Image 1 (cartoon, rainbow, N blue to C red):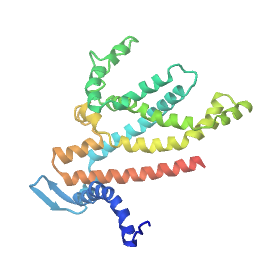
Image 2 (image 1 turned 120 degrees about the vertical axis):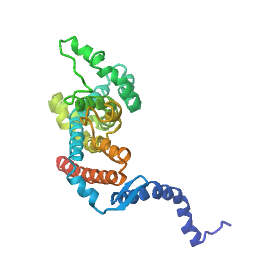
Image 3 (image 1 turned 90 degrees about the horizontal axis):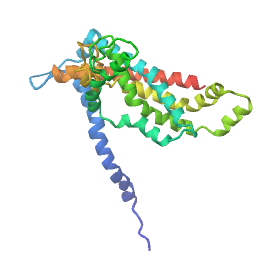
Image 4 (image 1 turned 90 degrees about the vertical axis):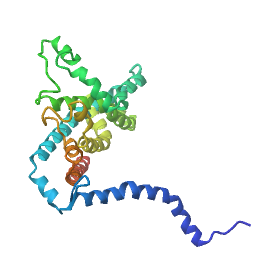
Length: 294
């Protein structure tokens, strides 16, 4: 005869299975969130100063020109990355989606490989590419009579250099998402468009774009959030956000205030300010994407 399970035991068993997840989630997600809010309301400099200041840190951010300048640079990187990186990723996805392309698997692997390379390695190796005298990029431009550019020291070019590096790093990653979307579009839709006499551009506009738009909307939001977390490239490639503060993004500024200047409370306030701004941007993007879909 099978054993009957008591109601008390049946009610406890699911919680035993959930306990490992709940313990990790509460310890490494919920607690740090509340702790960071508490920290943002204090002025804490190492162990020497720990004073409750209320909303003074956030009030200071409103008039902090360095903070808003770093936000502007980060927003510039985010917008330019969207305008360059996503079209490049879509173009790569359309290329490797072609059944007639020889070696499709090879090209997919090659385009995706930069995602696997660490930012520290990229920061060291790309110095040779962007070097003003011996850099390979200037050597190629010199073949066409274009003067050498100091990509990493000229304030006019340094953020564009970071965008170019970001495209090389992450276009392959976004390509995989677009490729999944392209593979999910029924071939019958293209066949119907062909019967109706649609050309290549009309098929792309009427079939491909609506089919991949949900993925594109997701990538726009994810890329925007990822761009505002930019830290390693300007810190390593541009020597701590240089020249001057020309490549100091908001995460670089957060690190400088929290771990160089030592004001952890102000750094926490920066993090929450960025979080609120990103939340507003994400909600606007979500509303626009839904309106576009309709």
